[in-house]
Length: 84
Image 1 (cartoon, rainbow, N blue to C red):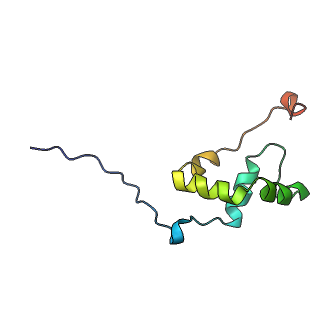
Image 2: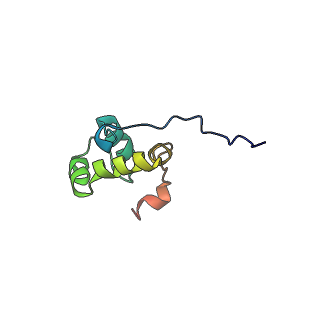
């Protein structure tokens, strides 16, 4: 008799045109994980454009690492901040 394999309880997401959605909230959450970057800074717009953040978020959502990446934004101690 064959043993049943354990199936994932998390349903697989299907995206329209094979591209996961990237919302403004996703971009803000991503920016909070970047050292010395706040979503409301003038540098944030340039960073999003220059480093192709939207496609990075889509790729992270496709491979399932997006929510692990933004789960806990890194904390920086005051003695390390001058190196950043």
